[in-house]
Image 1: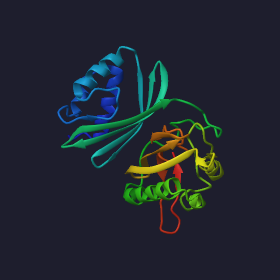
Image 2 (image 1 turned 90 degrees about the vertical axis):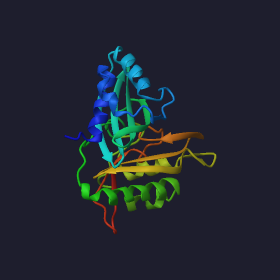
Image 3 (image 1 turned 60 degrees about the vertical axis):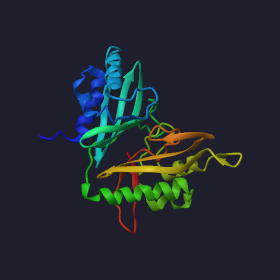
Image 4 (image 1 turned 180 degrees about the horizontal axis):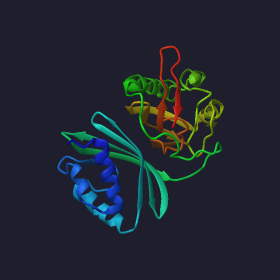
Length: 249
């Protein structure tokens, strides 16, 4: 029986806790590209790292994991002496992982609306809407976040259902708009510059972008200092041509 890519990645990440080298076989060491500067390329690097980490009694919780063609993206919770939240993205070729990106931050919150960073639904539904939801998320990021057309927020955001999990944010379109409008000497405090990719499965999508936060060049996943809506893991609603909407999960 073929094991789903996302389940192989669940096992791989869980081996940080157990030190079990078996799941690391999913990584193709000869072709593996590691974008985390603190981790050596190749599965030997991962094996050594995970074995070392397992001796510190870490805890690993894979909150959500999704699969999009050759990509797996996971929302994770770690406890390495302090609690952290992260996103992990793996690219597969010929059935094995050959590239990895991640973004990890200290766990914070709850936010002003009482929401934590990993609350909410965890299973994808509406798989037939994957591509339309991906298109809505990409359009939202490019139109509102990159181009700065904040007057179009409600073209994409369901004002009645919008739930914000960023520790610095709060529910509602007004809070999101205020965060995106904030500036210092005419420079937007949160400035999105480029969308690298949008990964999706059903009603969940992850936008990976880059830009500036407080004038500092930043790579953005859910743990970007901006992160008030995207790039985070988004629960995209059943979009239509006349009223696409998003609610953050």
